[in-house]
Length: 308
Image 1: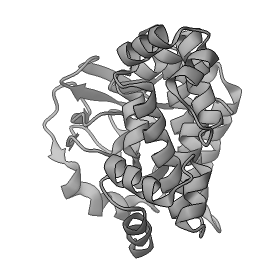
Image 2: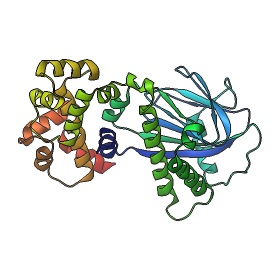
Image 3: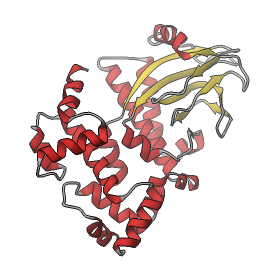
Image 4: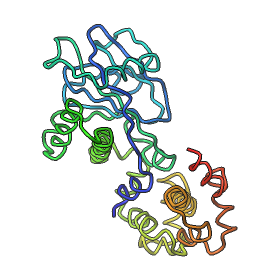
């Protein structure tokens, strides 16, 4: 399992569809800065994206989508400078249109848009920080990947002809769009602006990161991780901190607590068992570390999930 796999597996980011609507020109929707990650998919027609960050103005055509990261406000509209209404005001209308089959082809100047969000945990968001804040997946990129085109076609069919289990199907298809967008972005030359990506592209640091993700329960020290990287202890520690902005043991602790939070959510394992799995022989030391990293105790984290 590579590191992106392990991040996505333990974070289990899940897409939630806000709605689908046919927008007739002139129109505009404003999306506020949010810890949520936005996904906007143009099913038919075309629209413009406007933001204060690059690319500032962007045309998105049918079959293309954008993913918006890192608390970035943006707007969609029929023109680069269309007046906008806030998305919160429009959500009831979007949900009313959700099951209404749209006209095909859409009228000229209109756009059929699917709006979705993702809830990410802080570890994955910090790993992605430094990537372009607006990721555009264009028709050319999608056209070179037949499996992704098949996902998009399946999404369109499911939206137009819903059946039993449609919502689950749609949510999981949206999840696949997320993975494709991240993979596409990570392959771009400018992705090295993300510290995590820069570390993976460094062969020595990449080996150490892979070791942490593959064997989080091992009794790691900086010296042992340096041996995985094939470097001296001091050179490894300095390079790791310079590129990732945190020490090797701080990264290890955060990853262990991310795994532990997943086990608290998804299993009935007792806290001492979870502590063992993530490298802590002493459950009290584990609980102290968990609260230091996450801000809550393991017991409180488990109760919080159950309440939800």
